[in-house]
Length: 262
Image (cartoon, rainbow, N blue to C red; front, top):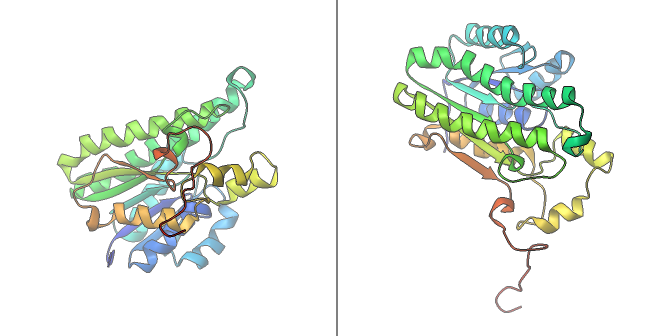
């Protein structure tokens, strides 16, 4: 079994979605967890649901907040061994020529700048100790082109490159850096898109070899693997957790062939 007893973890975006699911799983596996989220009012309830030791509130896109949250987590835990970078926001489904530059920049600031700032702030104590593991949350939107999602796609593609770069920079210093790239996952952000009929879930299911969207806990399990010693020889990797979405290259919906004996 994967065991994280004695590991000290900071989870950003920990008040909901993939961040909350990962924080809960890390705690169940024995880690001591601090939740970070910009939604301060939601943190106490998330702490109860996940079993986190402490919480800290702030904006990952703010250098001052990122440094403070990492410092508060390290102080509460007595150091840092794990960072789960799950904080992020979605974009508006709009073509590039119709997208306000301020909104485009905000999406990049939270998803890319925030990932960079938290890696830098939380990575320092790990580098000093010459051990640690980081998982960034990317997306299938960073692996292929999604029309209308230029800001989110650019940010997540850059997160992939940052992950690979840090994996190479920090590997010799004992710190592993990887990323998960989920497909559509039933987080509050995606449920909001569903409520607003931004996309059709039936179309997503038809396009996905496993025939459905992901649950946050499924992404959390992939992240926990990468954060654990089971992945001790894995760094600089971007792991699709997408039900086969990025593997499928044929035209149209996924071909559903009958099984043997059907």
